[in-house]
Length: 104
Length: 175
Image (cartoon, chains in turn orange, red):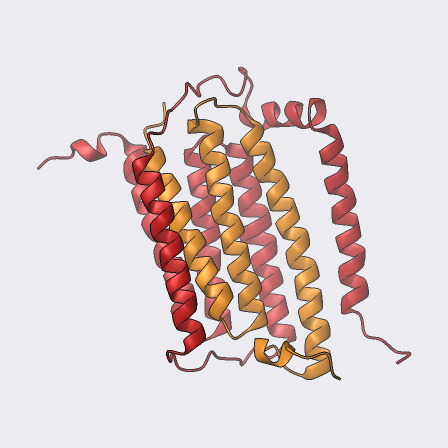
């Protein structure tokens, strides 16, 4: 049996999500913004797996959905870093504030 | 001394791991060198993997270690090394944007925590979710019996993002 309190797991995920949100809104570096978004996705995965085991009707769907979410996060981070690399080549910078216009 | 709150070992491990995750996340916000931030992020990912293992989701836990803690952290390192890896965040100074972001994040967190506290969470009997198989076997059967089309679509998504990432990141010779 598992003796972890559901509310504590959900609270951990909520706090992690909010830290990620704050990071995504305030970081200066484009890479760190992407990393913060990954942290928010990770918090959501904790919720999915928690409900898969400790929800009202436990089943494997939550874990399968967490797997899909991990896959989509990996695809997203690969394309995101490719964009950051292309941006760095164009502007010689990875700062968010340099990414606000479409001029060359 | 009274250890009644930690009667079960997994409860104790859960609180320790949660502490590690939150400390790593806060350190990620506070470090000024980007490479240290990525290392702190690795700590968060490994902590999440331990949580998944504690919850009996063996396959998701191992996948988390391999994909997040392994592949994505290394990819972040590469991205930092290929761009300006000397980059440091400027001194922490309060600006209007930071203040509004902090207020938004704190309000969202407070609302979520209040709702979580005031809800009564029904815990079902989760002992038979694997139908008697080991967890990876049960997930494999589920993937190929019920989620075949999403599974194939995800493989298509991975292929498209692979080609897209190569196409976006390569150097353009013609222009």
